[in-house]
Image 1 (cartoon, rainbow, N blue to C red):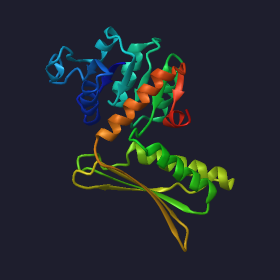
Image 2: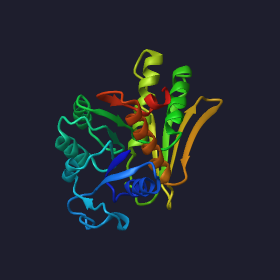
Image 3: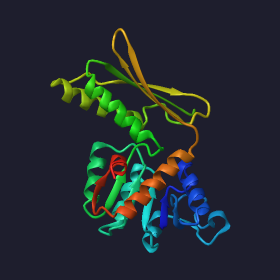
Image 4: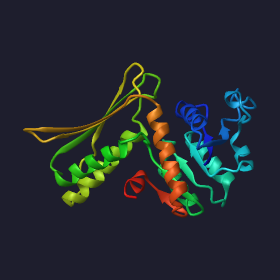
Length: 247
């Protein structure tokens, strides 16, 4: 499977490059970085592939592209791809509602799997928390996150996703608008990622915690999703990690 990686010099992108190069069943077709990156034109790991600007991806024959970049870079790449049916995995976060609608529009032309968190097991964690919210809507949920000190001091895409979906699940279960869950943001040392959902029930409390030990967890999950998207060939449309779990 030939893979193009967008955001190849980022924290997760770097791990993706390493995993692809180390796996004999995978081939690195493109390593795409910002046009202003000092890596442009340099060989990847001393091999025959060079770091290139995103528009160069259109000259590469990719079976799938994995994008961990920025909202602006993701949308620009989708414009460049146009109507080509190249499968795309998107781990970029921070899209506005309007940008999310644009992403959905591009999915009319190709299969796209989008997630705020690709780490192995996260999807099962998310679904378990939502199922509890549906079954016990009286429990007041809150969301907490802990990441490394270099991460922005604002809620991550993962926390915003959890809070929005918990709100929606409780609202449907109760039949009226539920309060929006609070999000607590913590930054600590080199912590890779800890996500927690708590339900306060007065005389009891229920907690769901997901902890990521290494950045490789995100890269491994994205590769697994890419393999699913290519092997299942589901056709143009917008997909999520839950689609992989139910297959």
